[in-house]
Length: 269
Length: 147
Image (cartoon, rainbow over all chains, first blue to last red; front, side, top):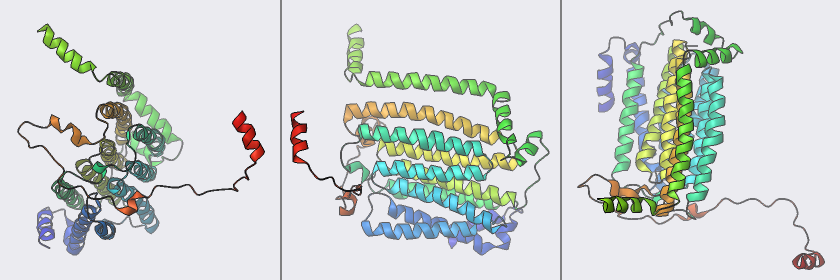
């Protein structure tokens, strides 16, 4: 309760924190949600003890539920349920991806997490990004990862997938992440709860009717109008990355090459 | 719908995704898994950017996410090429193999205890048999071996 009280005291210094002041118990709820989630994640990560994983799953779900209950409501049950289905898919799949031992399953759960994120993009009136995320990330990048895993993973489960860096980094990483999330939750919660009406912007009116075919046209206009130079730079970057990746692989095929180079340089000296 | 609540929810979910990726990056030792965790952090940031863009009613956030996806694709190509090269040299994906690159004066990391593999995890995915097993025709088999 101390931590919650401290964070509350910090938050309520802000005069705009009407939400915290009217519902102080709810604010501590999300704090406890983060603590429970962090503990659950700590138990679920590789290198722990086996029974702990079930407890970790329970704690993690409880933490996510507490946090979800504490966040501001949309005022519309259907939207709320839909949002938390997508967000829950993304978050739960992400947690499974980092806690499962086999890297193949990590890649597959990461792809599922991407599906959730793509759904969130669609929900946020960014249909193009949602489709691109599925096509490029889940379709291309994850498949490339699976290829590399097949090329590089030794048979069976490996030792280094079961252990971490000793006992120290796991709690510290979890504490750091929990502190980050906790501070951000309270910073976000202390925002004024009524939105300032966005200034009338020619683009703003257009995005309001997105989902309509206008959206793609606006996106294209912005991309190839305002950000034309960035598009060119991104294209160059893709080309450079392609050439660089091929160069790296070609050099990697000859392990003796760098040593010879170093010796040759020494001989020259 | 309350736009502010939407923004807050998206920011929290994006932050959580970022934090999960951060934990995975710091805790896991498989190079490929670490890289996937970095991608997960990028996803969290993308969510926040799209939410901000929607809140302000312009397409700037979506533009940034588009470029994030582009850079992530480049990054994946180069990182996977590097990982393949490192694997060819060391025959392991363990990042601890390369700890000679650590800062001077730091002690070497040695695994204190390696937990036994749990029996449940030794299960491999199996394909369920489908259809009817064809009857073996000895004549045909002999013919095939001759071919």
